[in-house]
Length: 181
Image (cartoon, rainbow, N blue to C red; front, side):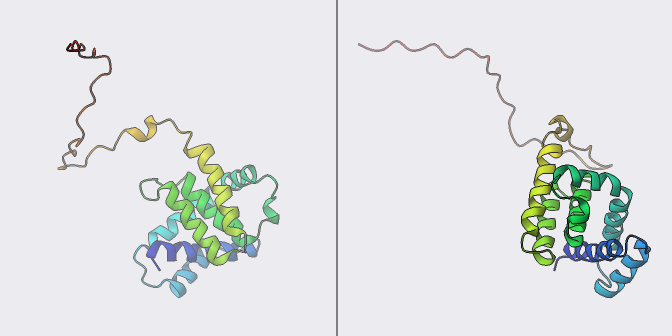
């Protein structure tokens, strides 16, 4: 199992326990215990904390987005496991750095969690909710927001553009040659 997938699984388990007990337990203690038990020595423990703190910090907005994307499913009627898979997916989709977790990776990882831990229709439900949010929020961002690449760091040179510049379309066409008779 890949490191980040394992981390998402441990975060999901921690969020599930926290949600199951009415959010009364200390979520950081739950994650610490689960990381020590299920992912000791994992390469990127900070990734788990980033997801956990991100979900906790944006919980109200994430839940509101979930309500809007699935209005026929009140939050308390969504299975706890599915609700927390969606929380992880929505956090990564809406708040995580898209350079670190591209939106489609966030969606695919959530679908995989739903296939592994959710009910028989969980993967389709998660795909529907996250796909709806993706189309509504991510795809509607202005293209200019994605067009400017970050400046190279110190000592790095920008990569040369491998494509030649396009010629303007306003150039007149070459005159037609008269046909031979």
